[in-house]
Image (cartoon, rainbow, N blue to C red):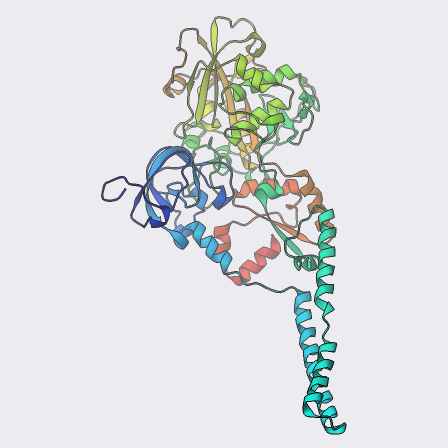
Length: 579
């Protein structure tokens, strides 16, 4: 928009001060300060490495006292849209504040271009040897010329020719070929070990490596959001996120798994543990928002203000065998009914054979579909058998989605033929307040009064381990309460007295690659330190680091970018040694 008129101009002609109109699928041409948004989210993987779209707002971002605004992570700058990123949903308008090399992506490109090339130790030694050889050849050639001219009395031209022939003969012409062949052989050996080396001299440096710095997302982790645990009113079910066989045994009851808060969160209130978790939206330096169903500090304060002050260990009752004992797996029907809310209350399409090929939709929602698929449930048949009658679309304003379906005895139990079923999926800080009942042991056929303190503590436990948490709810409606195709307002769900049933909590994370755990262990045996570098939340980084074997008693903590920026050289050296 220039001078109040909408017009199309090439991206390279955009200047600061222009207003850019954005729609779904647009590539953002410059760094923009958002002035208008309509359910807009951008995919910033090209800039931050995170695959989940980030919601945008127009409100100013508060900066903590004593913090340089430039230290606020890019993912927390929700009122900004950055060059080279994509509009993943919604639309909006933004004011151009930077273009070209002045943008965030341009700054990165400039820094990359300024990196000085450094020769490896072997190449430096070859340069030194080559200098000595050149000096030696020069001296020998001069002596040869003087001897031929002065002693043997040859003509000066013949003497010069003799000296040059000697000099050329002494040049080690095969040295370059020998070094190249040696490097090529080393590269081929590395390729046999599934390690591709682009620059031949890089092979030589591997033998002197003492520290390996690696990115997290997609390198040490699978870059696939996965449901790692499912929590019911009496149990924790651990999910095998690397399953290759479709069976209910992929979800095993293991109440000690994520049964207590992380050490750092044991002596604080539940609400503070939840506020500090990776699934809470923040505008501070603590981390960046990469999860649509984030919890809000103000809502946590309102709905969870009376929660217990400190965490407690989950008591494992080995006599409790409902629906199964410790180490056991319920039947497929249990997971079909417990997780059906995450399947039906979704517009996502699962990929081929439960993988990423052909998948469509939000990675968080897909994680629940994928977990259900690997229990042996055919999610496509499930969705086709229970089409959506009416829905409350997801919005970042109220952080939940709801869908209404006809009842099905196989999925919803008997006696509901004259009822409609509503499934609600959303941020747990808002969902707990909507419930007056809970599914007993996760079985939808039996309900009991909700134990809010229990669920708040479970949310605190999962949040303290850096996990994203999603709540699954369900309820019943009289037939005729909604009409087919109706777009319901959020008030239809939330502006009532508590009326829904809380089925369970889904703990979601991008899990580590199994081969990376082995590789890191081998590196440690070779006295090579491994450091993980990520733009994710600190708690999430520590949780993944612990699973990878990077976090231990010797290296128990992590450090954020703003903390690193505030250090002097000596402090930085000490922190790098301690971490």
